Length: 219
Ligand code: SAM
Image 1 (cartoon, rainbow, N blue to C red):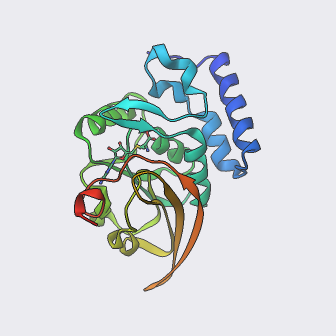
Image 2: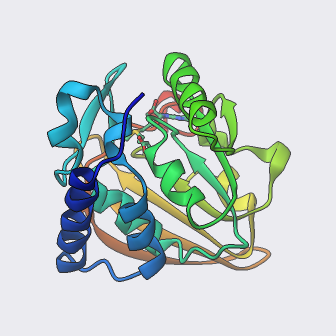
């Protein structure tokens, strides 16, 4: 069983200071990052890496996102404690655990079976209760729609229309879209039945979103 010591907490406070310096200011998000022991998502040998502002391999060719990316996407979501949130790309479960510090109503879907099983076990072991699903999240999770917020944690070739349909009015989708090298972070807000506003932010580099509306769909 991993422990969360004063040293880890100190490393997290330092990480949060760095995130503030890089422009993150949503206090709920910063508090969540300060609360979640990111080293729990790493093998013991890599504890030092857990509190660097870097992505890190989690197996199956996938990564745990960089803390700045997690903070940036979470901030764009303008999260409230009453939000129903869908995360696409559970991966290690870190982003989901950050979301759970702000709202208890989190749905998360992962395409890769071994990562899905590992994350589910992690949540159970730590008494966390997101709604976990295995499958192609590029199509969203229509059975439980609509969502106030949708976050995609893999790089998409286009904005999947299915995700737009699964937003509530005033709902927000945060998704990196681009080619396989870089993706622009987009925030899309549903302002009416068929009306959306779109904001563009800086470039990021994500692993590819697979599936029918991802890179497997021939989009
Ligand atoms: N949110 C994760 C975390 O906190 O560790 C990081 C996610 S990693 C950058 C991207 C994840 O998206 C990978 O685990 C990958 O298997 C998953 N993924 C890719 N395409 C997907 C799809 N169509 N549906 C669901 N998950 C997908």
